[in-house]
Length: 603
Image (cartoon, rainbow, N blue to C red; front, side, top):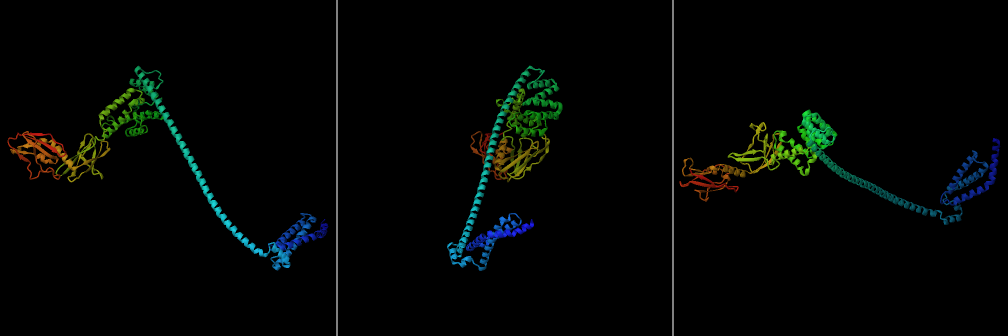
């Protein structure tokens, strides 16, 4: 089979050349001529030679590998080979002759003219190149403009995106505000609903306690324990009956059964707490009410639980309870007891004020029956009210801020001022300060104890120099519980103080104003005392033997630096006849007031 194939191949090639060679060569020649004429535009001969050569190689490989029938592929192979040979030859000659317009145009002028008329000759090429260059520049400018436009477009797009994002954020904020508003509105509606519910519950509780109180009053009038109690008023009634009869075990059981109803009334729990303290002590009562307070909701139980703590801890818890429940009226009465004389033994002014404030608040709830809802046994309420009014009457005007403040009494001597402090209550220490700023000075203790405090009595006085000008003196003190009170600012005017002090002495010792025939000096009337305290005197008028006050007693002016000294050149007396039996005197003080007309008889 191999020998037959090898011998048949030359025959096929010859047959194919004889059939295809003529037309393939003609077409290849025509193609070469056309590519030569069109050479000014592009090296078409080279392109045709290259394409034809590649086609010939591919066809030959296909024939060798028997991918196609040789009989059918050989004509194509002949044509490709002819085209490659002719086009390659034309291209080689063009390169050899450096002919840009082609070989034929160089040999035949008519062809060159044809190239010119067709616009494909070299003369047009420069213009075309210039046009291409301008076109490229235009394209570049257009590209730059396009790039600029693209950048602006990107910027616009970025701004739009930002605006879109801001719009989205704004929308979210609006939605959040809307949601918050709706939440607040819902919360307000819920609060209103809760307030209405609380009001309804309060009214219901008040009505319930009123019913229990009426039932308790009826049972109390009947007397005796109820065999099978079921209602809270029945358990409370039995608790009182058992307690009064001395059956503390059943009383305790009945009180616990009443507490199980969680009735918010104060008097059953205060009585139960008293019973527990007697039986179990304060610690036992605190434990029982602590358990009840954890289980129940009644404020009365929680309040009575607080009362089972000791001293300062009890007061702190009670103050916190009132702060949280400012309208729970019974708490104010119980707070007043914390400051009462019965509880403390001795009260400070601050204690009295705290007691009065709490009792005043408690009594204020009596209006329109505001206290009834807190008591099952109305006799207990009446007792609390009676005690409150009695204590308020005893406390008097202790709440008046202008009362019960320290006072200062200046007394002038030739050496300076002696200041005496008067306090509204016992103190354990006193201090003072001159002016509005600076440290306070302690007056120190006296060498004796104050029986009211059991401690050394503080010195109530201090000294100031005679040169002290008008100023403010601040006073503060420690009460018997060590609590600081004050400072209180007191105005000090040395001139007014001197006049007021002298006036006080003159009024107090007026019998010494005038002295007839003193020390055996017959016929002389002495007015030495008035001279010594003349700084308070504006004028002295007198008369003899009961006549009208028609004479003026001359006096030297006041010497503030040495107010009690009588000038050496002034006589503290004047002469009278033996017929003078009496003398009437009236003093006009520097503050404008006048003394009564005083009459002095001669012995």
